Image 1 (tube, rainbow, N blue to C red):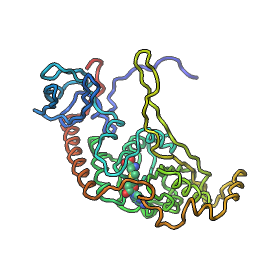
Image 2 (spheres, rainbow, N blue to C red; image 1 turned 90 degrees about the vertical axis):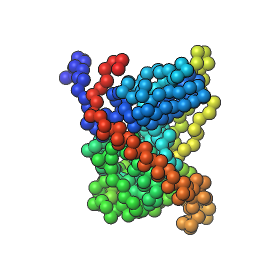
Image 3 (cartoon, rainbow, N blue to C red; image 1 turned 120 degrees about the vertical axis):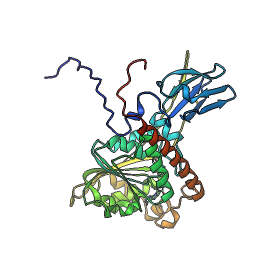
Image 4 (tube, rainbow, N blue to C red; image 1 turned 30 degrees about the vertical axis):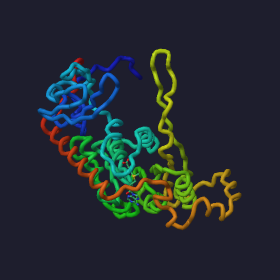
Length: 363
Ligand SMILES: C[S@@+](CC[C@H](N)C(=O)[O-])C[C@H]1O[C@@H](n2cnc3c(N)ncnc32)[C@H](O)[C@@H]1O
C-alpha cells in the first residue's frame, strides 16, 4: 500500500559523503566563490583572510564574505553590488585548470545516465585528461563505489588528481588513477568484475579486447567520441567482435534561452558539437550476438569504401588528422602547478572546519 502522507522532515546532516560538507554552510577561507556584478560579469576568487578583489569599480574585502552565508549580495568599497555563490559542478569544470579538453557538463550528465552509473558500481574510465568526467563519475558511484581511471600522460594525471581534490576538498576514497595505457586494464581487474567502462580517448577500438575481458555480462561500455570517423571505426570493430550488443549512438545539443520580458527566444549562440556518445553491452561469455536483419545492407559497401572512410593503417589515426588540439608538456606542467595549488587551498579549507549540517533558511 502506498501512503500519501508526507514523510516527516528531518534536519539530520548528511554531510558524511566526500565533499558534501564543503558545499554548504558558511563560506570558508580557501573556498572558491563566484562573484557577479550588476552587469553580469563574473569572477571566481579563492577566499583568503585579508584578501581583496580589486576592479575598476573598487575593492571587495574577502573578510566580508568569510564566515557568512552564500547567496548574499554585498557591496564593495564604492557601493557596487556583487552576488556571491559557490560554483556548481558545471561552473567548476569549465573554469578549472586544464591539460586535455574536458567533457562538457551537457555530455557528462548524459554519460552518467546512458552508462547507468549507480552508487556502489565499479567503473573503469580512460583517459582521465583533466578529470572533469571523473568528478561526475565519482559523484555517481559515491564513496562505496570504485572508479579506476587510466591515463598515459603523467602531467594530465597530476592535473586531474588536483582538480578532483579541489572539487571534493579531499582525496576521494573511491578513486584510483592508473598511470598506464588503458589497453592494459585487464591486468588490474578480474575477468567480468567491472560494471561499466567509459572511454574518452583517441582510439577506443584498441581497448576492445581488454574491455570485453573486464566487463561483466550485461555491463555497459560507453564511448565518448569526437568525430564520426572514430565512431564508425569503433562501431564496426564492436560489431565484428561479436561479444557485445549492437551499438546505439547519439549526440546532445543544449540550446539556452534568453528570457527577458517579452523577448523570450533561443540564444543566438550555442555549443553545437562536442562529441558523440555510443553505448553497447557485454553479452554473456560464449553468447553469440544476434544478427539484426537490417544489417544485410552493409554488404552494399565494398572493402575499398570502408578503407577510404576508415583506414586500417593505424598511423593515419593521429591527433592532428582528427583535429585534436595538442597540449605541450610545458603547458601541461603549468596547468598541473596551478591545479596543485588550488587543491592545497581546498583541502586546507575543508579540514579547518568540522562538517556542517544543512543551513537554516536565510542563513
Ligand atoms: C580528451 S582527454 C579526456 C578528458 C577527460 N575525459 C575529461 O573530462 O577531463 C583524452 C585523454 O586520453 C588519454 N589517452 C589517450 N589514449 C589513451 C590510452 N590508450 N590509455 C590511456 N590514456 C589515453 C590522453 O592522454 C588524454 O589525456
